[in-house]
Image 1 (cartoon, rainbow, N blue to C red):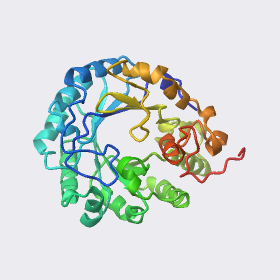
Image 2: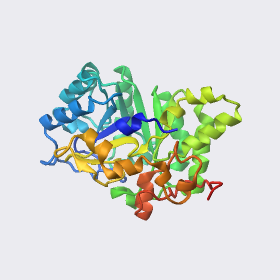
Image 3: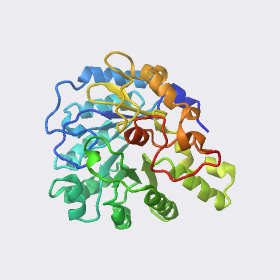
Image 4: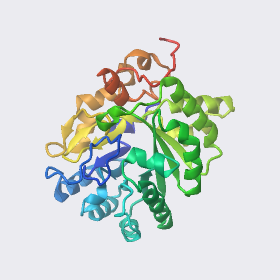
Length: 353
C-alpha cells in the first residue's frame, strides 16, 4: 500500500517561513511571537532549498506556513520562485488585516495554487476564544470571502478538541456557505501551547470520524483529517460496505492519502532550517544549512525508520491497516516518548494484537 515514490521524496513539505505572528492561539505549535527571529533562513537560503526540492520526481507540494508567512517581506518572491521551478506552492497565513485583496491578487499572480485559513468556532465567541484575539472571527470570514473571490482554492482548517467538538456540525454548515474547496479537521496533538488543551478521547474521536465519513458525500467540499490517519480505515470500511470495487477505492480521494503520515510523505522545515517529520513531531533529523532537505528526508535514520510500518510498536505494529494508516507518529511521541508507539487516539483492536 505504500508508494515507492515516498521513499525518494515527500509528497508535501510544510515550511515554517517564520514564527512571527500577530495572533496568540491557545494551541499554537510554533509558540509564535510578534517579531521575526534573526535566525530565520535568509531569502538566498530559501531559494537554495526550493531548487533542491524541485529536483525530486515527482516534485512535492510546498506549503508556506508559520507563524504568519505574510510577516516575511519576501513571501511573494519565494512563491514565484517555487512555482517557476515547477513546485506546487500553497500558503497558510493568519487571518489578519494584512490579508488584503491586493495581497491576494499578488499571490494569485505569483502562482499560488491554494491557501488555507483556520476556523475553530461557528460564532465570534467560540472562534476568538481559541485564537485569543478579539475580532479574529470576522477577519477570518472576510479573508475567506476575499480568497474565494480572488479565484484561489481555499481550505478551512478546524481544530478538534474536547471544547470544539460540540460545535463541529455548526462549523460544517458555516464552511459550506463559504464556497471552500476543502475542510480539514486537525485532531489536537499536545505539543507547545497545545499542552494546555484537552483533545477528544478515543471513543469521541471515533464517533467524530464516523460522522465525518457519513457527511462527506453530501458536503460541497472535500473533507480530510490532520493527525488522524485512522480516518482512512473508517473510509475504507465504509467504501467496502457500499460495495465499491478495488479500482473504485484506488481512484477515491481518500486513497490518495494512503500511507502518508509524519515522516512518510511529510516533511517539515522549521524557520531556522531544522528538518523534522512534521510540525507536531519536533525531532530534528538535520538542518538545511548543513545538508540538502531531500538528502535528510531520504537518508536520515529517523525518516527511514518512520517509513517502515513494520517497525511500529503496540497496536499500530500489529494492525492490519498499518501501511495505509500507521497512526499519528506525533501523538504517539507526545503521549509516550516513543516515536514508533501506538497512537492513543485510535480505538481499533487489531486481530493480531
